[in-house]
Amino acid sequence: MGSGFRQALILLVAGTGFALSVMVGPREALHDRARELAVRIPLVFQILTAAGDRYLAANLGGFRILVSEAYRMGPAELALQAQLQKDVSWLNPAHEDNYYIAAAILSVPELIPAAQYILRRAADARPKDWQPLFYYGFNRYYFERDPVAGAQALLEAVPRMSDEGESWTMQNLAARWIERGYSAADAARIVGSMADNANPGRFKRYLGHRAQRLRDLAMLKDAAARFREAQGRPPASLDELVTMKLLERIPEDPFRRGYTLDAEGEPVFNQRR
Image (cartoon, rainbow, N blue to C red; front, side, top):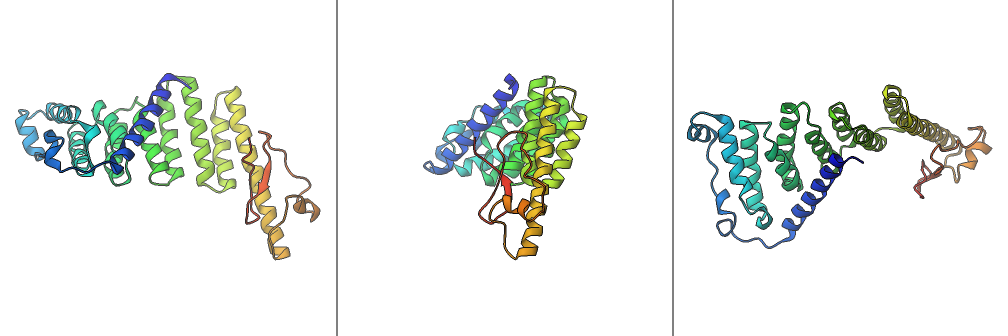
């Protein structure tokens, strides 16, 4: 894993941990904490006070946020900070400090829409920077419970990455999220397409293995559905699918973990290590 990707993960974990600590911490009055965030100036006046320079206005707004004692903020202060950061993003969507702070601090469910607004605008305004898309994709996956949209954001970030190892890591993570968001058959097609488009080498083979195990899982699910329809019950074991001649054999998992049935008799990947 490349250093840039490690730094992004560290920021993400630290920010999420901070936000959770704020949610359970003491809630003092707004005027007793973070006084520098107590007033939000309308955007038109922010621009006027910066002599009409919206980028200067964004820098001034960003400075207000940077000097605030974020670690002491409660929900009310964080909500105000979110609005101030949206203002900075409107003034200058490419502002780097602003999107970093949004990714680290605005990571509780009620503030995610503000963070996503900032991160999406940063991603569009910084076409060579993959990190806004990584944070945006994580929020889509973790907070918005949409692994498909999260994976799409990660794949959008891949062409922006110059480090091959980081690119592999991002694509691998996207493939995992795709598996959780699509049916096995659809996920197999998407991951298979990723494998077809990957450069020759170990990672191409790795994606090919992921696509193959998804195709095999889709085949097992189809056989289990036909078993249920014929027998009026789910299979008790995968071997029953072979016994009933719905499969010639249980496929071999390229990752050697194998397949099993869940509590409802549905074929799934074996999660044992």
